[in-house]
Image (cartoon, rainbow, N blue to C red; front, side, top):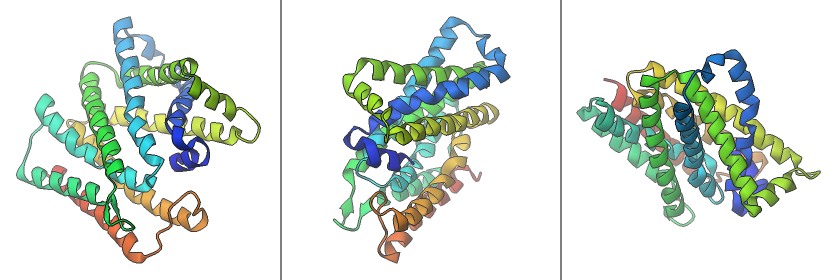
Length: 283
């Protein structure tokens, strides 16, 4: 859906979709606060720190949205498999999680699979633009997961998730309100004929932050932040298959895989990375 929105409407200002989408957070915040009123039982300092964390999380996806402008989202999502590897090492460095030979080998496999999935068969070279943007996004996200794990050790995950959603909303509101370019784009989505893109952006945010809430809860229950992140590693398989199917019906938005070997190469890279993650956490 990110690719549909970016290439269908936002084009060279893909990050506008990120900020406009963040305005959908209140739809989830109201219901969440009604279910768990304890989210307000925190100090102002703590609330502000998690608001900042939520704003930071939103910015983590800025490079990803820029990459979607030129590269298939299914490939970019697969590159997010680098995140468990970096989270694993940050967890070892700051949280005392253990490292084994199998984990090191698995990390190497994930890195190789994630890098080579960007290979462009048309130019016979790696997509350096995608590598740059996604590497930046992965580094930022990895730091987020470690910070979240540290936060859940001290505080209730529900309060953390709620105030993070507030932070995402405030960032989007602030950016759209203060930057004329984004404000004009937002106003244009309110016009007849463009409202479907606004609905998609806001709906995406609700689904996205539902996932964030679940991930924060999972991080709070596990003894390894890397392990909690690694369970998401199967996502690229679904994303790539879905994008391949969409390519048959919407070639103007999704790149069509004309040759079976292209499909086999991409799936092989994904499988390579998933096996690497298995080695990291099998022990």
